[in-house]
Image (spheres, helix red, strand yellow):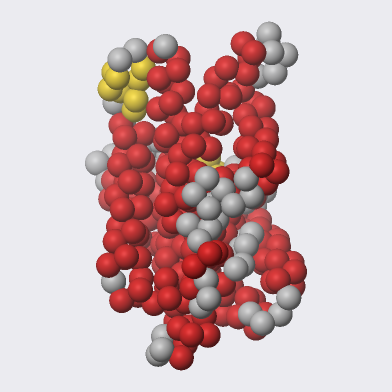
Length: 310
């Protein structure tokens, strides 16, 4: 029972990150019907920027009292950089293809992903970057399980961010414009909604969430590398599909569920296979989930609200 509780805690931690990244996928898809496969690489850029800045700021003294200041500064630098990256991709790669067949936009998204990866490789190199150990490993006992202060911070921060996003979408004029554009782009434009602004806002918000997720990932795992966004992006996409791509609540639910499924799989796969497979096969569970959802429930758990579209 203690192992189960521990794996649930680990799963919720990782799932919170998946949910943040999945929100970027689902916002863009819900508004313009585009699967932005470059989104995972925006997460990678946020992680690399944060790792570089924190290491440069702290130098050889990662345990100094300036650690939190360094982390805050790195986050404030990563967010606008990732937002600019997302805006540039939308403005110059995706907007010209808005009326083109979806396959063209999909191929372009893959191309943007490759470009971002190669630029990151040229800037930071091929090797892994180590994130300085700056958060004390204070452990809180929860039953027979242990939860670290870093895990608590990640879960609470992600929850607050997701709640804030829901407030923006459902309680602000921008959110109303975004929901109207998702319903029917042409009618929303006739009603005075600036479609280009709304779509750019979706990319900007999604990229900001990606930056925060990137900082969380590199802080949690302690490393960052230019290819890390590929697998993370695929898992977040799986989470969005699991919950119902195009549905914000679905992305949040899908991220948490995928994190828990992956964590439970990693914790019990050794026992289930008599040691033949280890926890290093945990990525397999994400893609098993993706295949099962696409086969048995393509609309996801909550489903995309396609029935409301004009």
